[in-house]
Image (cartoon, rainbow, N blue to C red; front, side, top):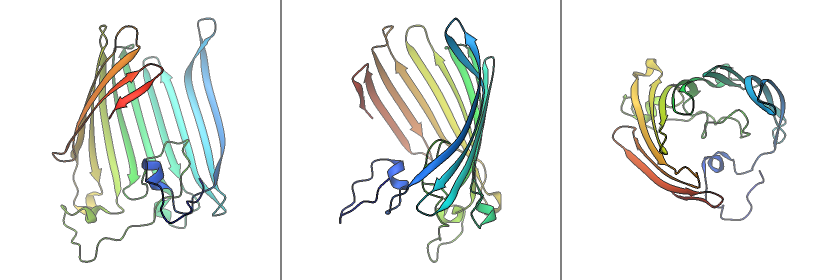
Length: 247
């Protein structure tokens, strides 16, 4: 990721752009990946288990980056996965665990009905983007400093700076024979209880999509409520071999 030259930097396009420092970065990975597969039919395979261990290297800072791990198991209709990220070489011991997550999904009726649940623990200000294990990005951000004179009341966002956040996710999806798909997701957050925070229903998302039997196009819609009473929504159309239009 090269450095941006000139007086005006390009407009930030997505969360990855927002996480890149002004000087760019130059990184690499050393990865060990193991899979356990089973045969399906005469030529196909299906994954039964997976173990990944990844070590990042930051060439600009001349240091080893984060150590990441992922373990995944498939037991019939149930899929379970756990991931973790460690920065073992940071001098701050309490900042070495940068992310820990786990999720489980149950395919109750294959390709028709499924439910899932997940848990994630991360530092509230350590990342500008929630990274998958395969993504390379700069080290976690430094500790934020609350605004001068800011109180630490529960209603003040500065009271939650640099505190760990626990996120519990739950979801369900259903697909119907006539091409209609419906999904629902809920997110519950709990931040550090020592900072007067309590569990709360942070957000809920409802998605509905439709595609004909040819699967040549798809109409997607979604609505999200939260945090608080904030409402966001989107509508898009995806055409095969052409692209997606909308938001």
